[in-house]
Length: 289
Length: 328
Image 1 (spheres, rainbow over the protein chains, first blue to last red):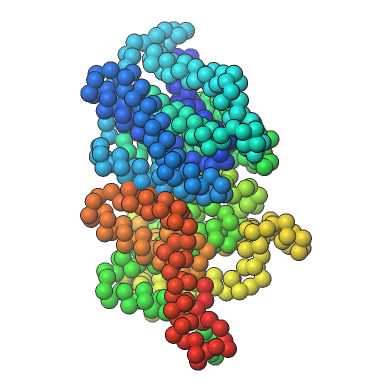
Image 2 (cartoon, rainbow over the protein chains, first blue to last red):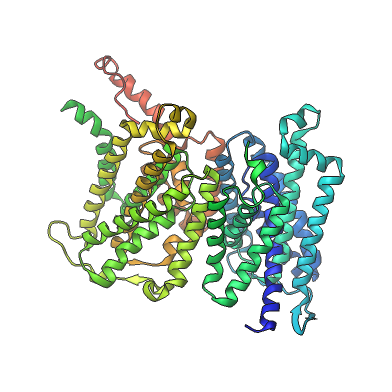
């Protein structure tokens, strides 16, 4: 393996990890605060990608498309939260898992209805190559990583520096106490859900130029995103960041070493981590409910 | 004699209805329903009795199917031995992963099983491509030898075989419900502390239930293999991972006849709707959400009390002493 191949492999892994992180963070927040497993985040991811495609075709600007993806992802999440999740927050975990899977499948049906089943290409917004230690690397992948890190910092600031964010963090510890303080928990849930949906939409929009946009794209990444969340520990944002980049690297470097292994290796790692530490890397405290 | 009849009549009635349907609807549909209901009852047992939700049932289905396929493709010709080997490989696979998996909580259990399905998928598609022929699959329809009495190569005979297997499986699960083990399974779902207090080990109850359920799933896989005469990695595709869970909930979680009703409804809807609008996911997805919001009872779960009432009212005067005759 040459150094050039390795560098481009690492950059590829970082960009994949960034996408995984943006999607997994929504799942992680939803689990931490509302105690639901929200498989429908993958729907907002597809919705974000499709709106990126449509708006970029209509307006010619892909960044505008990504913005539209984020906004529509958030709006869809808001609608779904109001119509469905509002009624099932107090139910057990598997209940939300099944219901959100229904939303995901139904949403894929809606996407097929509007856009058809033919995969759509989205062109790269940045075609420039950048030189890193003698290797030509697409600038766009680096931008994706930068955006993911910005989002991480933004989320961290939001959770630690604003009242709403602090309420969310307190809610992750104990919802009843927050409610007792007179904070409107239902509104808190809605805000968290919209943030999660918008981030998933962002992930879809940023991922769209790297792959083909097709209706089943959510199902294809489903397993990987789950793996990220589980390895990191449900409910932990720092753990999610670390495990997202870990999984991205394993997928990317693994495919350089032995191609068929690339998709399997992360699952093997996840099994191992779960068997050693059943709550994931950073998930211990939250799970003892 | 009367007691035995009363125990059996529900199962026999249900499957005579399926057998009757054979006259009206095409054979592939009925066969699909039969195999799918066997596939689902394992998931139904896990979800309804033990409280484990599994998004990885295709993994065990594939183990059963490939166990059968390897035998019929490489070594032998007798489909019965093939099915037996498929079931055995399912038993072995479940016994290997079971001790690790059943210690996890229900939500992690679902996701780890999903991961297992993905691993099996890539294993069959890429890593073992020399043996499994990758995406092309193994074709062995012509290898299946004709056997006396019931020739599994013929769809008509296979139908009788599938019907008998399904009846046996249902009788087995109905029997399980009556045993102490069945009660323990329910107890481990509802209150594991109390079960521990009674002196049973949650772990071994769950492990046994896990092995039983997934061996049944492997049986369904073996039946698929012999029926279709070919197996490809598509059988464990992660995008179909939720099918058994959907059918379980559609039919009615934890009810004995839920899987049959669910399989009929699901296969039927898939057939009808895919002809009408071409995307049945839309329908299935919203149906699933609707059923969950409407009280997660499923079709049979909502129908059963109503049927019971009807039945009891009709039979009430002569049979006051023996209570209701409809079983779950």
